[in-house]
Length: 441
Image 1 (spheres, one colour):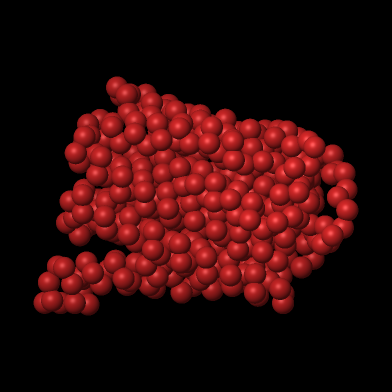
Image 2: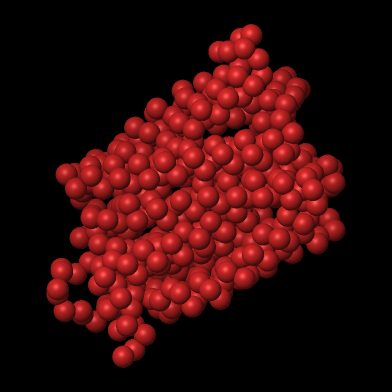
C-alpha cells in the first residue's frame, strides 16, 4: 500500500487528523515565536545598534515581509504539485536556522538580512498548512479546524514574548534568538516523521464515496484569474490586510508601550503581555471559528460577519484598556495594571476572531487543486500590507508624534491605528453580501 493510500485510510478516522492538526499548530507556534520574538527584544536591540522606532519598524516589517510574501506564491505552486509536508519541513528548518543566525549578527544591516532569511523560510509554512487542514477536515468542521490551527498565533506570540524576554534578561538578546531557533531545527524532522500528505480534496467527497483521482494542479495565472474575478476575494483579502496592519503592528509595539507608558521592566512585560496574548488569543480565535461554523451553516455571510462585528466591539475596548489607569484613580498602580490586563483580553481575542472564518471562506473560493495557491495569493495581500506596513507604520508614527507627545508618542501612534480595524469591519460586511455568489462547493 502506498503512503498516500495509507494516509487516505488514516484520514477516515478522526484520531489521526487531530494528531496532524496538533503538529501543524506546533509548527505554526514556532512560526510566530520566531516572528514575534523581535517585539520583546526591541529595547535591547535598539540600545545596542542605536536605532530609531522607524528603523526598528522597517526591520520588523519590510525585512520580513518582502520575501515572505513574494516567495509564498512559487512555494504554493510547488505545494500544489509536490509533497506539502516536505515543503513545510524544509521551511521550518530554514526559518529556524535564520532565527538562530540573528543571535550572532554584528550590525543592524546583518540583522536586517537575517530577518529577511526568516521571511524566506516562513514563506513555506502557512499556505500548505491551510491546504492540508482542508484535506483532513470536512466542510462543516473546517472553520473550527483552521481556527485551532491559528492557536499558533497566540501561543507563538506568548512563547516568544515570555521565553525571549526572560532569556534576554538573564543571558542577553542574542541567546534568545539562538535558543528558539535551535528548538525549531530539532522539531523539523519530528514533524516530517509524524505528518503525512492526504489525498487532495478527499475531505470534500461524500461519506463512504470511493476516492477519485485528484484533478491536476492549475497554473498560478489561472488561479489568480479565477480569484480576481470574485469581488468577495478582494474584500476578504483587503479586510484581513486592514486588520493585520493594526494586528501585527500592535503586537510588535505593545511590549514597548508597556515599558514606556506603564513603566514595566522587561521581565514584567514578558509575563504581562504573554498572558494577554495567550489567554485572549486562544479564546477569541476558537470562539470566532465556532461562531462562523454555526452561522455559516445557515448562511455563508456568517463567515465574514463574525469578524466584522468583533472588530466593531474591539476598538472601544482597546482604547479603554490603554486608559484603564484613569478608571482606578487612587487604587494604585497594581490595580491599574490588573484592570488593564483583564480589559486587554477582550480586544486581543476579538481582533483574532477573523482567522478561522476568513481563511475557511477563502478555501471555498477555489476548487481543491487550487487551494494552496489561492491561500498564498490571499496571504500575499494580507501580509504584504499587514506586516510590511503595520510594524513600520506604528514606529514611524511614534517618531513623527514624538515632538508633540514625547514619551507618550507610541500611545498616540497606536490610537491612530484603530481606524484600520474599523475599515476591516466595513470590508468584511461588504464581503458578506457577495460571498454566496463566489462560493465553490
